[in-house]
Length: 257
Ligand SMILES: [Fe+2]
Image (cartoon, rainbow, N blue to C red; front, top):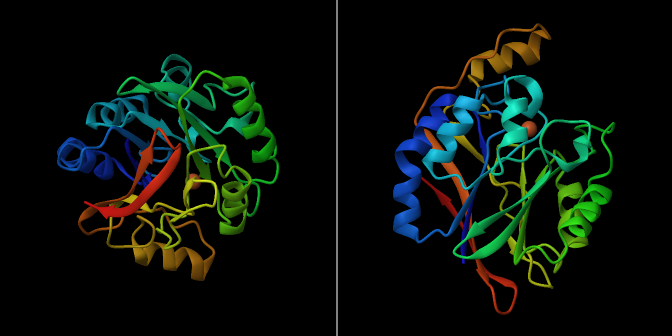
């Protein structure tokens, strides 16, 4: 089973890029299931239902979320209605949508979970560990393989989640920092892990933003409006090859397209 995960889509141009390229890439690489982090596909204003719909049609079997997910109120109903989009588990039951879903891939039941970290991102949220434990308990016996998007700032926290759930969750990938890390690895009990997948959007600036505007904001501490970066759109992704019999990830490959 080949699972492709794609890092944070940073703008509508990133969505358009996936519309053009993702099905082609899936076909050429024999991808069975694809997860895309789309929390901020509308560019600093979360994700709209329209862009979520485009991402689904583009070949995202599941869209995951993060700290920006709830910025656009119009997504709330969509989160409730659709099975193929999740927001962080630790937003809690009062939040729209759900933190995990179970979808089909070639006849296998795939559990996709999304959780947010606490360290340097949102210490007010419930612990991701408790939220993940609860989801695993709730979904027990209902899935054949499992995937977690841990949307967090600190690599230490993401690695702690990786080692904590090694052998219990099959694929664990980090999102949020927009820069792909070089630490992909198969953990001792067979879980495929990477601290951050990267991003999908204009590649010319700082994390999808225009470099000059980010530098101005940082130097002046004034709220200069964000502007999208220029440059060619690129999707950073990782392919996890999972062996359903041994329940182990056997290979992890970084890809850009
Ligand atoms: Fe984020």
